[in-house]
Image (cartoon, rainbow, N blue to C red; front, side, top):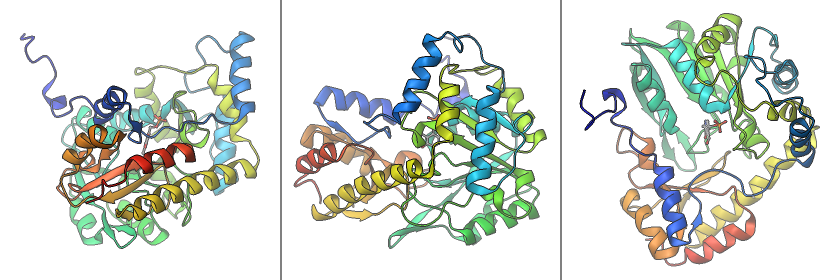
Length: 385
Ligand SMILES: Cc1ncc(COP(=O)(O)O)c(C=O)c1O
């Protein structure tokens, strides 16, 4: 064995994530960090208190049950019923995971293997490529391109991406980094192809409640899709607790079992005291859910209007934490220079692509207090080309 190159071949394309590099640069330069997507305000007070109580009461400090606490599984099932009229059995069709990240990994490792292909859309959330590679599978990407203020894909290219080897379509709606909300027609096309080719759809819906324009439609609600869809959710974004890493999967029993079989050997369980707190938060009344979207929409508008006023070519997101600008120059060079020149950190969207379609796109996170965004915008003066 050589220690010079100990990393397995299938992971050699994956160095340190861009987020680590840019966050380190943010600290070193005293920059406003609009790179990584995490909010700078806390989630609902009653949820935070419930977690603290769960720790100090000593009731939730040991391993929770493998699939998650019964109360959280029931709360997830009730949430899917309340918002989407989807029925899931909390005992056989709900699995609690170490954030959506573990759910993505366990779903891919449990459902695809060597030689299989996974079709996904680029730009893509960075863990997708790594987990597909870990599974020994191959990814085929369909490019989302801006068309005015909307991101679209070519249906013919999606059809062409599906081969005899395709096993899974990996969807993310609302979508990071573009902020796109896949509309019903697009989802119907994806569903029709999944049914025609007998594919499983893994859908990452962590931004389901952070929608400003359009409507989030879970693909599992479309006819014929519930039985072939693995839906992934997370408390991180909905309740502004990205560090808690409480996620979940809802799917019919055989799919849930496949994901759980892998998940039990990754973390086994996590976040004992956070599970009852998230269970309570999921039952918060509608004004909470409307409030978080409204607040974030305000932040989106501050950021997008501000960037446009500075002369940036902004693509306004329909949802999520992120806005994209076209800097009409190399995005990686732009983002590496920005902390030094302007003391602001952003992420080059090109790192979320296989193709060169995002080479001039830069992603700014706007999930920050309006005064932080205002400061970033002041610093960004004169940075647009
Ligand atoms: C699209 C997408 N999926 C999954 C995750 C990770 O979710 P979690 O923090 O619950 O693991 C993120 C976080 O940024 C994301 O943007």
